[in-house]
Image 1 (tube, rainbow over the protein chains, first blue to last red):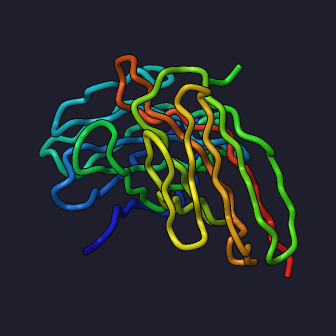
Image 2 (image 1 turned 60 degrees about the vertical axis):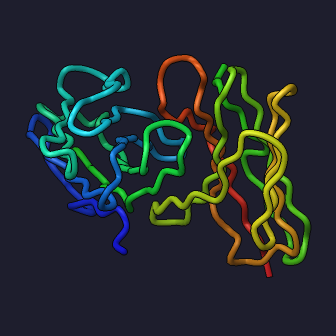
Amino acid sequence: GAGVSQTPSNKVTEKGKYVELRCDPISGHTALYWYRQSLGQGPEFLIYFQGTGAADDSGLPNDRFFAVRPEGSVSTLKIQRTERGDSAVYLCASSLMLGADTQYFGPGTRLTVL
Amino acid sequence: KNEVEQSPQNLTAQEGEFITINCSYSVGISALHWLQQHPGGGIVSLFMLSSGKKKHGRLIATINIQEKHSSLHITASHPRDSAVYICAVIPYQGAQKLVFGQGTRLTINP
């Protein structure tokens, strides 16, 4: 079956603009995770969902970042008033269950803020 | 100090060599993952383990819970093994999220 997909694959925007990044998890996976990876670094946790609810959003860097998963499947990560420091690869992963379960990663969205 | 430390950060070897990448962590964990990331960003889960040893093809992962240490070994390395290998743990305390090491960049020369 299809893996985790993310759109767009690349996004270039100007400082101050609003962006939305989309993640389509594997069908049936209840847990969905967002991570951010800066150049040369390992990924960092942002937020994860169990079903429709955000179970832990402690990794969101500030209130410009917000994520939703209204129907428990597709998730959107929203960034307001983008800053150059937001430039990174945003990774989405899903797993069948929450916790110690294999996470399947999407290809990521490379965000560049000019 | 990061909760998850990997060594080495960079490793270059010749085709056929036996490769070892190390991961040490400082928190109690419920599981540890080894991930592979090829240029372009795609991440693939290689192993998830909470004790002992797992083997898949030429890859072997071991974990010592008491010493808070894990190793990833590659036997008969090949240029296609060139990638970044990332260790990530799921801490016991509270969250179910992965905490990542900084990655080890492996280059296998023909």
